[in-house]
Amino acid sequence: MSDAPTLPELIDMQIRTTGPMSVATYMGLCLTHPSKGYYKGADPLGAAGDFVTAPEISQMFGELIGFFFVSLWQQMGSPKEFTLLELGPGRGTLMADMLRVACRAEGFRDGLDLRLFETNPALIAEQNARLEPYGPKWIDGFDKVGPGPLLVVANEFFDALPIRQFVRGVDGWHERMVGLSDGKRSFGLSPTPIPASAMPEAVANAEPNSVLEVGLANGEVMTRLARTVSTQGGAILAIDYGYARTQTGETLQGVRRHQYADVLDAPGEVDLSAHVDFEALGAVAAKAGLTVQPLATQGQFLTRMGINDRAKALSGANPGSAADIASAKARLVAPEQMGNLFKAFCAASPGLQPPGFA
Ligand SMILES: C[S@@+](CC[C@H](N)C(=O)[O-])C[C@H]1O[C@@H](n2cnc3c(N)ncnc32)[C@H](O)[C@@H]1O
Image (cartoon, rainbow, N blue to C red; front, side):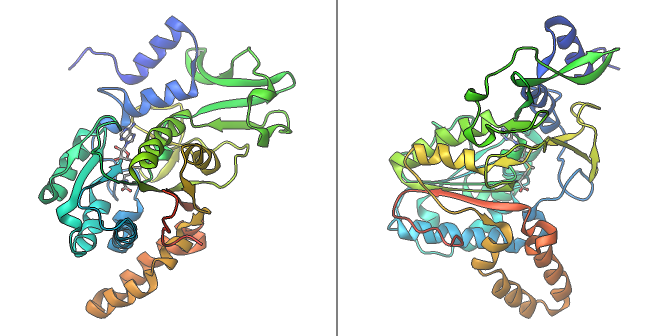
């Protein structure tokens, strides 16, 4: 048995030593602590894990995204060298489904430089097993991509990056902190007010006790990628749960074995995530010179990309699986399932016309 402190012990020790920590620091430690973070442990995906993602529901999801990128690649003149980068590729399923269809386009595979950005060693092994024939390289920084056009895909990645939370008081906004009360982890507020003028215009008139979530890490990642896309050409496609306009509301959530779980209990064993502020992401991409498409729901995007025809073709080829294919399609596009909650965001070089967006 090891005497090394557990992640909860480490977090509590840090709070006792240096005082309450921001929600972002807490979330970062819980998810990506170098040895004990949630995303450093076993594969969290699938029925036996904590959650199921769209690529794991049906191959149609990745195949349609493969067509999406072939269209952009062709619009760019079928460049002989280009980078395809996935952020948080999970088991590699999305990329494998994408490449199965995309590599049918003449020249796509020859020019492909496949890069993956991933923190979880167990998932890196799975990605390697699935994607090895395409010669993937894992990168730990976004400056490590080739000089050609850059195409980026991210499904349920941005929701996993730490957010800060602020609560509206009468004298301004106060950052929400994680501290200890009677030895138990609990939320509190920083006593120092931040003036409303320092917060987004959209929440200027927020009611007292409103919660604002700010994804600084999201902005940082998008800034770096958008600058590269802006100089080298390309596009960024991000699919995630989130909202179209910057707004107040608390969305930080914990999930464990497919059930909601307390955010403060069992650090490192619970998946923590927050809805993505797509307006903020779009503002960063636009500032870097990219054209941001009107946000689409996942249902709209997949329907415009042809999921109905794809489902029909797959069912025709496998009549015995027709009911499963129909149910997977409904799960991805039906408004009451994933169709409306998840959004598709695209920022691209000016002049490109990403399919699937109005
Ligand atoms: C919710 S899973 C989504 C996986 C996959 N995209 C899918 O749709 O199945 C989040 C992914 O992002 C990775 N991830 C989370 N935080 C990360 C970070 N800070 N840096 C790199 N990868 C990260 C996780 O290990 C995982 O692969």
